[in-house]
Amino acid sequence: ISEPFLKASPILSTLVSNGHEGYFVGGCVRDLLLQKEIHDIDIATSATPNEVMKLFNKVIPVGIEHGTVIVRHEGESYEVTTYRQDGEYTDHRRPNDVRFVTNLAEDLRRRDFTINALAMDRKGRITDLFHGQEDLEKKLIRTVGNPEERFQEDALRILRAVRFSSQLGCTIQKDTLEAMYAIRSQIQHLAIERITVELTKLFQGQHVAKAIQYIIDLRLDEQLPIFQAGYSNIFKDMKDKIIPLQSFAEVIAIFHLLEPTIKIHDWTRNYKCSNNIKNDALKLINAYHFYQSNGLNNWLLYILPKKLWAGWMRTVFVIDNTTIQHELLQEISASLPIQQRSQLDLDGNDLMDWFPHRAKGKWIKNILEEVEYLVVTMQLVNEKKLIKEWVLCNRQEPN
Ligand code: ATP
Ligand code: MG
Image 1: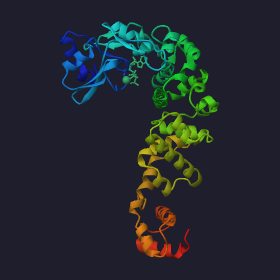
Image 2: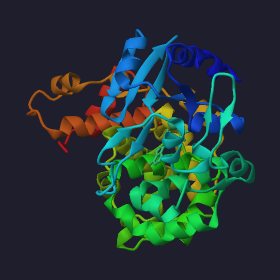
Image 3: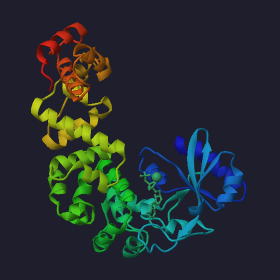
Image 4: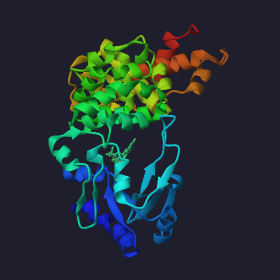
């Protein structure tokens, strides 16, 4: 077994030596068998949440009602979830109630796909009740049980199937695919936050082009905010150009650049994005427009924070099929005379001193911005004396 599992195995040992069952389950077992990097290790147990809380010193009761307790162990967090069965999903969002059950089989049966319904004990022995390993080998996504029922219970699974095809390069099994098409209109009733999470992961996957083909073929876009109103060309337009992206800000930037009639604000509001995502999307788009009219220059690097470079390069690649050299960005950025406004050898007080008869007003902001642009683009040297000369010479008239 690999290192993250060895690190977590004392948790299983504690559960077992206290008379409970404990297994690694879900994505971590799947990713281990695929020899992919493991992000988080989830544990399923026959112990109740209260029993789990008593057995471990450092616990965080994150979702007791769903049976989940986080156990902290050697600096890592593990979700330890009591075997459960999900109740009805009458609102298509969340199960109305969860029932704790005593055996692993019941817990595995509620899981979405056969490849996600695998469990492994601390000795590395796999429990595979639904031929998940066989499907993994064939790279097939197939629901556990009747696909129509499973998608009817929770329509998010439709998007999850597409998301796993993007992450794992899997094909969706025929009956599962047909049920996704039949049940697709239920996607409209899902909480949008859950959709945005799946779309983000979908666009991060190595096989995102394959996933977008599924969205087009199954007409899933027609069930999603904004696309509903008939913008199905956006997915078709990006199909042949898309590459794996990092954040939803890049996704929005690309959607907007492919369909400029829809405002960024509409994307971020409809998909309930955080302000961070919104601000990053705005910066990516501004930088893209500036680049289109001016090419790579100092001002572009000045307005584009370093943490967005990679995302911006991906955006330019998808939209223009142009590869920007990272070294070039590095070089230009290193040559900038200033990195931010506060380094400008000029502030509002200087301007008030130089124009004592002018009332405070928007002219101050305007001159600051103008001088900032000139300094960054090396048309003016960042020295107060020279700046003053320029301002007095060129900006005698208030503007
Ligand atoms: P990732 O690598 O993205 O974390 P994952 O398979 O771990 O992939 P999660 O969303 O973390 O996916 O869910 C953990 C496990 O819980 C899944 O592997 C699956 O067994 C189960 N699961 C999650 N969401 C659902 C759902 N909507 N319906 C049924 N089972 C689900
Ligand atoms: Mg997970």
